[in-house]
Length: 431
Image 1 (cartoon, helix red, strand yellow):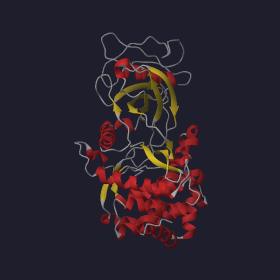
Image 2 (spheres, helix red, strand yellow; image 1 turned 120 degrees about the vertical axis):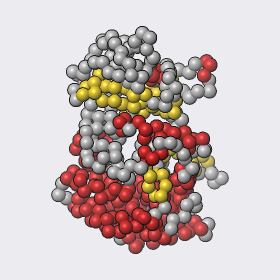
Image 3 (cartoon, rainbow, N blue to C red; image 1 turned 60 degrees about the vertical axis):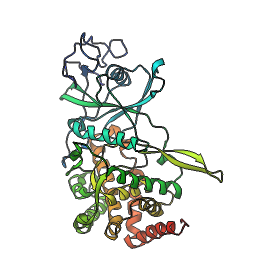
Image 4 (cartoon, rainbow, N blue to C red; image 1 turned 60 degrees about the horizontal axis):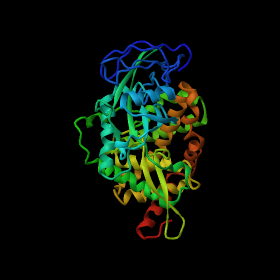
């Protein structure tokens, strides 16, 4: 929180006011957030002072809009964990994030809770997403459903009041903003972006994407309809909505490339949507949302297996082919042989869900469309939120180069590489 922040009364999920002492979470006086507990009120009642900031919306509205990204300090986050969830924090540190705020939290384990996790992630949703608590509730239930089905997803630690999340209201210079807080189990592993991209790993990631979509067909929840996010900018069918953000690219060759892809998308993908098979997509299986751990193969070299699946914030109804296209695109980013990535990922996915001919015919443009989504939205977000530029531009560092390589080689040549590589798995000799 910057100088000049103020602490005034606000309400949280339990709908009660709290009078604060005006001291920092650490106990000393200063400009930080004042925290305290009112006599007779539950621990989820907090009063917080914070300035909100504006960044690109990750919500369902197709228009850019003010989105307050949380800016809690380590001390404030620690106090929230202790007050809302009744856990004693021993260590806390911030984690990178796009438009939410995440903290790695270590807790002091009680003697009677030896089986409980000692590491968590405190996830504070941005103000725009926090206006859709039903959607976040469904995301939490999906994560728990998948965990029960054997996937390495996070569990959700309930609040002291037994809820999956808590809404904390914050008063700042631009008015009151609400932030939904959840405490998720910490998942071990290294992001795929930081390990060698082998055919074995790419195949496993593709198979994971297929298994996720297949398993989510069995998910049932009374609020699952909230995953029908028609104007959600990150849904792959909404590539044409990027036209509203093209000014972020200026008058450049990059803009010309995106305009070209958008037109091809309108002409060739939109008419095919009715022929694609619908499902619920994770929608963001990027190389930072999949964690892996190494194990030794029979030959002594390192073989990686998936140990964690992160971030269900982009979930929405889509199509099987969307999931594999999104996964291919992100796996291309750090690969030393990016144009061969698609075949290995596709082979893994099709070992679970074979694509139809019409779905396969759309794959090239869908991957190009996802590159454009990531690159354009990142450029737009950087204009609104320059202090988060390093994180926002992760994909852009090599993304433009990868997209240009695909377009230079052409659809026919790229598809030939992908489909031939995928076929090689059928013969037992992967390329």
